[in-house]
Amino acid sequence: MLEFLNLKDEYSESDLEEALIQHLAEFLLELGDGFAFVGRQQRLRIDDTWFRVDLLFFHRRLKCLLVIDLKVGKFTYADAGQMHLYLNYAREHWMKPGENPPVGLILCAEKGAAEAHYALEGLPNKVLAAEYQTVLPDEKVLAAELDRTRQELEARRIMRGGDVAGEA
Figure (cartoon, rainbow, N blue to C red):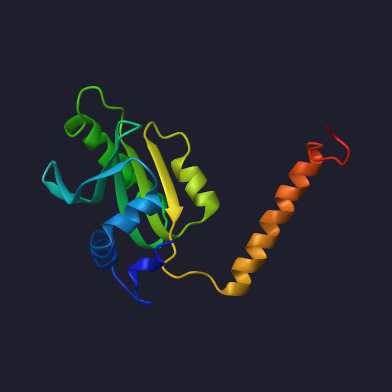
């Protein structure tokens, strides 16, 4: 949930990146514990072509670089290939002795589950794709999702035979 960025309906990848950098502390909290910011627009040259990695982090506990590619549109299989290229380069040129191989995260506005599965499955590099939202869902949508999750948890508890009345 990236609602703290206050982005309007239409924005570019550079607008998204700039907003994330301006709100870096909140973004790090959204990512979770142990992330350290390394850089943005990290340049790399392959043959005669220059590329730029949107965001680069290091995860202290996992001891690896996290390469983040921002997409304002829908995830495509081409995004997976681009990230694979970045990770191969990062492993060869940016990884330090004692570190684990880098991990890629493609943050996109929309992701088709099947396309992501087939594009990312079996790659030698660890690449993840995740959707982001810049606006919290409507209150009714949130309430329905909370109710659905509560029902699923209750069904799991019943299936495992937990919390039966009269148990010691």
